[in-house]
View 1 (cartoon, rainbow, N blue to C red):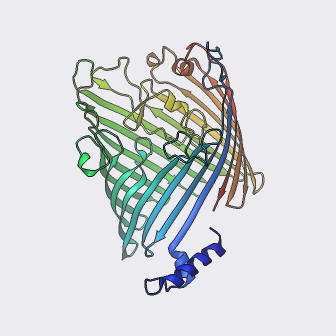
View 2: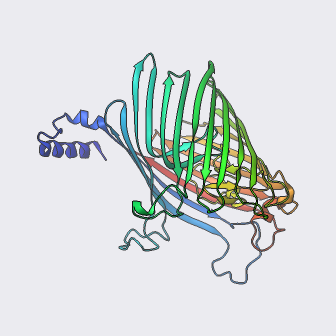
View 3: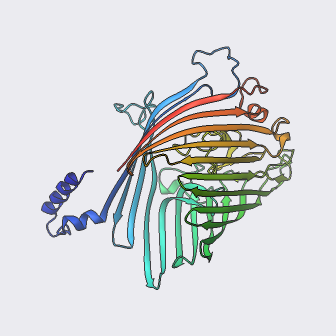
Length: 449
């Protein structure tokens, strides 16, 4: 919305509002309403979706993968006061040019535009002076644990917190992950019997200058499957350092609990899983280096026994790989850490475990051009759950990033994945022994308002 349009709109509201509160200056009203938006257009092409070129008997559609898509993300903030706001964010996409039809009349049509209402919340702070404040945040929101490896979801949640400057904060939270077990349209068809409830405490401490400690306890109570109620108790911690040219972090999550009646013999299955992540960011003049390493615990050799040791994973690590993990330009929902896992109650469970390490070199050639080279490698941690194979593969990406000021950004990316036998065994649909190279091209442009 341009300045001229804004002023026209506020002038109309002023003329019609009379004594109903519109008698404020246009400048005051503009401060109360903030509108931002991101418009992303993306092109993707890959030579295949797995690592086996064996043609199926029916191959009319070929084996290549490709699409052009558009995503619009408007973000609206209503500043009630300086310390109170209402926030709304919606995402229109992924809308594929070859599928989603802007001229569809029926809302039930399969080619209708995709719309996701991401965040709708109220947030406020009460100031006590000397940097002390208390606050709340209630509604649908993006929420994560200290590491983002366990909980990193959009969900309905209420959070209350207390902060003492930047030296200390503590808060309590409670919310629900969405599921469709016994959830009707009217209130009489809903209750809390078959819900997935998340609650706990979170804190942050400033240890020394630049050093921070985040510690939290997240509890998950999942009763959406009848007779298979799951309890997960997950303490999580992040130790981080933030300097001008150097940053580092060390993340850890431990999960314990049980799933009732989950073994092959109808007994309770106990949970004991963990995740570790560490990384650094170093700026050396025009060069910036990112490094990340991720470990997810594997299950033992037997499924359905007394112990579940595989980690309940959000699939949102800090790795900058585009195929092995989530693509940072746009999540295409087909990264391989998800595809080699089982999806359960909003989480990904990989019985083979996972190790991913990657390093990225970014060089600022000019203020508008910054190429990035990403090198990553991955293995499983229990080869018996990957048909006796360990190596997942090596990924190489070259991202040519172009930018104009702070509102226009473009990427041209070349992708290459050299798979090991473990990845082929867990992904291929015909010949599990094949490990042919997968390559692709990605181009994206984002315009921000």
